[in-house]
Image (cartoon, rainbow, N blue to C red; front, side, top):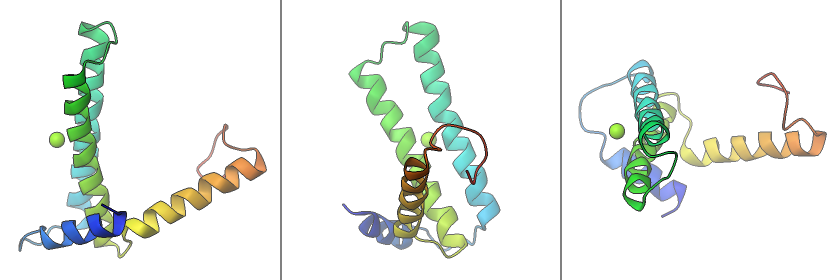
Length: 107
Ligand SMILES: [Mg+2]
């Protein structure tokens, strides 16, 4: 499935309820927290060893993050293809300028 196809899947399955970008952003943060919580527990309880089952559970939560990325983007008129393109352009520019590591969002 391409990012464009995923975007179409999300658009078909958003439901009728109007939920704005603030709601989607809160969902994104919540799901990112679920990823962090699962990783934390593996570090605490499993000596940092990720079982196949744990990897699958984390992958599910990363998918939830992806959903909210798509939804937040939709609310401001930016689709998944745009998000991926903008991110790749930003990272390639940092690589070319030798600023991959450092401080600041716009380095
Ligand atoms: Mg979740």
